[in-house]
Image (cartoon, rainbow, N blue to C red; front, side, top):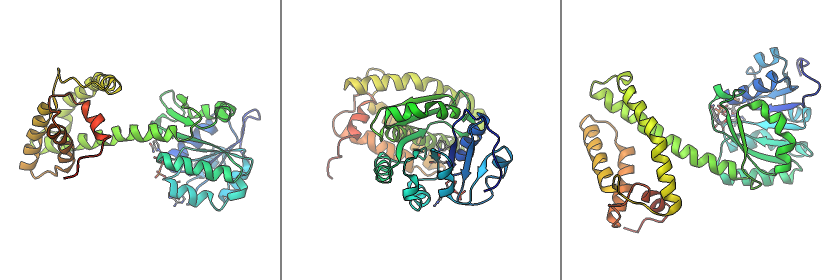
Length: 301
Ligand SMILES: NC(=O)c1ccc[n+]([C@@H]2O[C@H](COP(=O)([O-])OP(=O)(O)OC[C@H]3O[C@@H](n4cnc5c(N)ncnc54)[C@H](OP(=O)(O)O)[C@@H]3O)[C@@H](O)[C@H]2O)c1
């Protein structure tokens, strides 16, 4: 162990396991709010400035867990989480583990069962916003698991900032929301970089495209609200635009991108989905129809 932390005696101690960009931001937020903060990371050397600010660094994850009743774990993935926590095993007994590592719902369920088997209380969580938001009003974090446990730690977790939402006692809910939202995010990001690649080949610098690209982001909320309404209603009118029309638009983009030698695998995959809807006789429906269709098995060829 290194240096005694400076802290407020009324603030509960917190341990942070994992000092990647997000784990470091979490530790900084707890330090800012004067929680006695203990940190540990697999690779040495990432805690120096946190120790300067008053954090306690331990040599082992087990020592870090022993230092606080509440441990936050935020590492790359589920495999990394178990690489860190499995050796501690019984050392988690009587402690609370809050897992802010992104992962699928099945991992949340399995880790909750694993924690329970070791006598630890467990909350799963998902951070929806980037590192720069942590400790700020713009942070958004979802939690799931025991409501009583969440309420017991709510004031400490509030250091993470912004909006915290408890989604219910089913421990996999935050991961389920996270996966759906990351699905939206990464498919959108794939389209954005593809559009910039096409623009570049047409001699349009990214910054010149931006005013119009930003325009797309301003119309998307209204479009998403409308899609969500139709999906929940199970009603997919093609009054504003049909799947046939959307497919024609995709064809133009694929043609243009191919002419420039740009990889069109992302758009081809999107077009295969609209093509299936047309083949199944739903080409005059609106785009929301695809959300219904994607949940059903594709017909065998
Ligand atoms: N960064 C963001 O803006 C952001 C936003 C929302 C959610 N998240 C989520 O937060 C989590 C952490 O993200 P991050 O940005 O901090 O960086 P990251 O690259 O996802 O994770 C880095 C951390 O994982 C540790 N790690 C990786 N493999 C390990 C292993 N086999 N054993 C032990 N530790 C291992 C690293 O330790 P070493 O330093 O030793 O490599 C480091 O502490 C992820 O699940 C991510 O999806 C991040």
